[in-house]
Amino acid sequence: MSIYKTPNAEVLSFQERARFNFVWRITLVFSIVVLALAVMTFFTDRRFFYFYLTVIFITAISLFFLWFTKTYKPVARILYFTICIILNLSVFMVPDAFHIQEALWMVVLILCAFFTLGNAWGIFYLIANTVLYAFYFNLLFAQATSTMDKITPDLLLFMSIEFGIAMFLIGFVMFQYGLVNKYALKNTSDAYEALKAEKQIVEHQNKEKTILLQEIHHRVKNNLQVIVSLLRLQSRDLKSEEAKESFQDAITRILTMSLIHQKLYEKESLMNIDIKDYLSTLMKNLIETNATQENIQYNVESSLKSVNAKTIVPLGLIINELVSNSLKHAFDQSGRIELILSPESEHTFKMIYFDDGRWVENQNTTFGTQLIDVFTEQLNGTFERVINDEGTFYYFSLKED
Image 1 (spheres, rainbow, N blue to C red):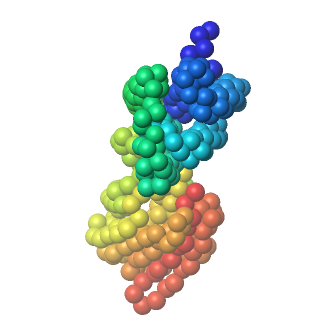
Image 2: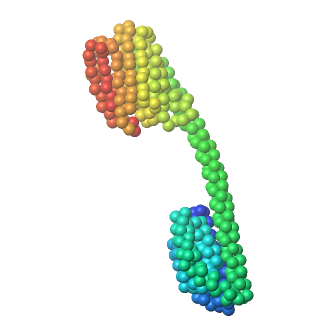
């Protein structure tokens, strides 16, 4: 495996892996460059030889930890900070030398900090090195210029080579940063396309499931209609009016449930049911199917937009019993029914049912009121019945599952 190729770090996200690759390659190339400069300074200017030797040692240790830990941030923080200290020491410990090259190394360091550790670290190194060179130019630069006559052709050659290498590293850092951006952009694009494809699959699956559920609701509704038809046929053979009335009550309850399935298969979304639309249709059907009640007015008001399918079944059956009882026992030829629903808290809602009739039967003894109790308990709710001069009120507090 090529040493330039980064070690396996598959556990990282692609953004972090791109930065890891950046730190690895920069550190590797920097080590090679500094090794070459250390060899050159050994023969030209040994004042800087030990500084370069120390940097080689630090970068070698950094490469070792990068290879085995597969993490770059702590390694990069220590590496950059240590190199920054070494650069500062070289500037102040060798006062009679030009330190133009160190400024370029600091540019490399600042760029690496910005690209790998973020803006905060980049700004830190920028300020630190700016302050350093402010001190250098004001305190030591004049002393360095006084030794210009001591500069040899070999030293100038070395300085030009070091300058060129530093510029190369600046370009290399920018090039690697471009690769990081390109890598991140490619992976972002691939991730977007993968999510887009998954979204299309999920949408297709949801559409299939919606169609399947709509078909199920349609078939359940048809089956309930068949049961209603059978009950109606059976009721024709009954002699007892009480038995016929019981059959009719059963039919209206089945039709109430049938209406729920009809509303569900008519909707594209099966999560919730438009409560006002359902209850208005239910009350209209109940009143119209009672042939002797032609002048019953009704009104449905709801600030509750929708309820889930699990709640609507017992709720519809409660209202079925309330309306059926009002039509049977409260009205003679005309009357008025009102139904109001409103949210009470996050998972509960209030319902007020009212009719202005005069009851001719004790409602507490009917089978319908027993069913109201049962369905109210299913919704973990309570209700209260109040009778006054205006009519009969039912106050419900119900919980939506």
